[in-house]
Length: 617
Image (cartoon, rainbow, N blue to C red; front, side, top):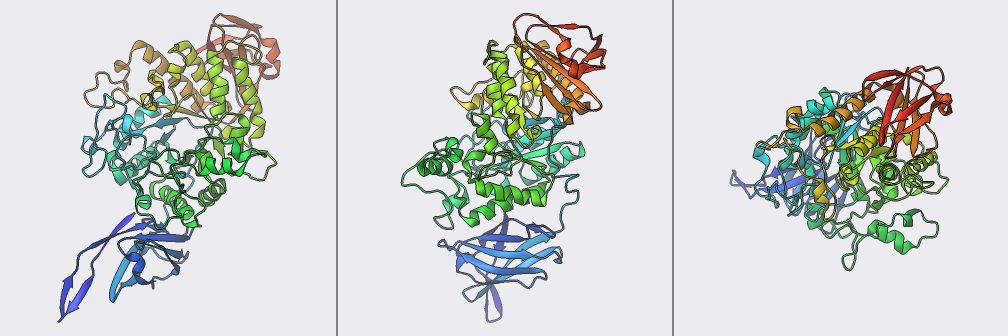
C-alpha cells in the first residue's frame, strides 16, 4: 500500500491556498516492468475518489483501459497495462475532483535480479524446513513490542493469550543457530499487519495486505531478514491466507460494494466437511456451506467469485515475491478456498516464478481427501495444480500410531506402511511436506507422552522418509504443549529468546542433559541428510512390517541408506536375507546417529523403540 498525500490548490487573485489534506492508498503499492502479469488492477482508496473524473496518464508504455467504479465512492480500480518497453519511473495519473486537478503517483521499476537462483527458488526434498511463529521465537527489538494506535496492546509472556514481543530481528539474530542445526528453509506464520483487538500472535487475520506488522519489525524487518537468509543460503516460505481476513481489514470495514465477502442472513460457519467437494453424491447446500461459510465471527470470508477480489489476492502474492524475495508459499486453509480461483492464483505464480514452491494446508482425514487438493493421478473433472500438501495423513495415520499403538494387522506401524503405500495417488509424493507437529496441533513430544525413545524414533523417520521434512520451533529442545483447552498452549516462547530468560536454550550450556541429547541427535541426522543424495533426491522402498519392525530404504546410484524402526518395547533381531534386493554387495554400515561403522552380518539386533539409520558401505 502506498500512501499519497494530495493537496488541492485553489488560485485566487494570483495567491495559492491549500485545502485540507486527504490520504489516499494504492493497492498494489508498486509494480515492475517485464512481468508476465503486466495487466494489473490498481485500486485507489480515499474519500470520494470514486467521484473523480478523468484518470488518464501520458506515461510512455503505460495505458489505462478502464475505470471501474463502485457503490462505495471511496474506491476506484484502474485496469492498467505496463508494456515491456516502459521505463522505470513514477507514473502520473491525472484526475479531477470537481474543477480541481488531482494527480496520483504510482512507481514502476526493473525486476529483482536472480529469479529462481537468488529468490523464488522453491523448497524441495533436499531441504529441512523449520516453522516459526515470529511473536514466540525471539525478541530482537524491544522498541516495537507495543505500537501506539494498534488495537492489541498486550505484552505478557506468562500467558499464551497475549503478545510476547518476538519479531523478525529476533529470528535474524539466530540464523546461525538454525543453520548449525541443519535447517535450510524457514516457514514463518503470517507477517502481514494483524490490527485486531486480541489473539494477534498467530497472524492469520490480516487487516492490511500491504503492511508488514510493525510489531514484527515492519517492511525493513522483513527485507533485512530475507536478505540475511539468502546470504546464508537459506530460503523463506511465506504463509498465504486467501480464504479470509480479520474483521478489522479496511476492505471489510469499508467495502467497495456488497459482493467482496460471503454474506449470510446471520453468522454461518463452515461445516468443515471437505468430502462435500469431491463426493459424487454431495448436495449443493453442503458444498456451499463448506466453501462459503466463515471460519469464525472475527474472520470474514472472501467471495472468490468476485473478479476484483481474485485480482487483489493474486497481485498481492506476486508483489510479495518480487518485493521481498519469497521462495515459496504455504497456503492456509486450502480446502476452504474456491478451488478454481486457487488454480488461477497458483498458475499466475508458476508462470512468473517457475521454480517457486506452493503447498497447501489440508487438515483432512484420508489419502484420497488429501490428494484431491494437489496434483494427482485421478481422472476427475477438477484437477488441482497445487504441487503438494501438508501431509496430515502420514502424521495422523502413520508415525503417530507407529509410536503409540501396539503392532497389529491394521494397527501400529502397519498404518504408516499402508499410508505410504497409497502414494500412488500423487503426481509427485516427494513434494509432500511431512511433519510431526505445528502451531495448531499438540507438540509431538507431548503426543508420545514425553517418551524420548519414541521421539527419537519419530525424528529419525521425519528426516529420512520421502518428502520435505518440516520441524516446529522448539522440537529440538523438547518443548511440550497440547491444544486442550486451547491451541495457544503449543505456542509458548522459545526459552532464551528474551533478555532475562532463566535459561538460554539456544546454547548447549543453557540446555539440560536430556535436551542436549535430543538436540545433538536431530542435528546429527539433519546434517547427514544435507550430504545424503539418497535421502534428498533418491528413491524410496519399503518392506511390509513384521512383528512390529518396519524397514525402508532410501537409495540412488551413489548411496543406499537403510532405516530400521523397532516399535516394540523389547529388543528384536531381524534376518537381513529378506532385504538382499537392496543390500546385495554391501558388507558394512555406518550407524549415522552413533557415528560407528560395523560389519554387516546375517542378522541385526535392534534396541527397543528405536530407529537405526544406516549408510551401507
